[in-house]
Length: 129
Image (tube, rainbow, N blue to C red):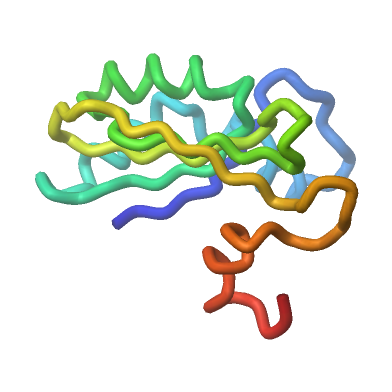
């Protein structure tokens, strides 16, 4: 598996901090370059999991398709059930399959407590949930 939280700001102002810009802006690693690298590095049964803002998915998807990658899973992440999804996890492979779409809500309604689904997902990574 390839797991990636790539730099994704494409049309945003740069800061004075060059390291921060490198980590957050895709001017040094375009989606095209990333997709080509994923295709080269991934074996025929591999998966690439990417965390990206929803508004960047269309651009990324065009580049993934051009590189011979197919979307097989799409997780829409909601901060709250009544808010729009601003973040997504997309899973690509080299093999065409139907796409599975799921949703994940982080917080319980009117609360700062995590949903049970979110807690279960991150239980292995947090000391306290």
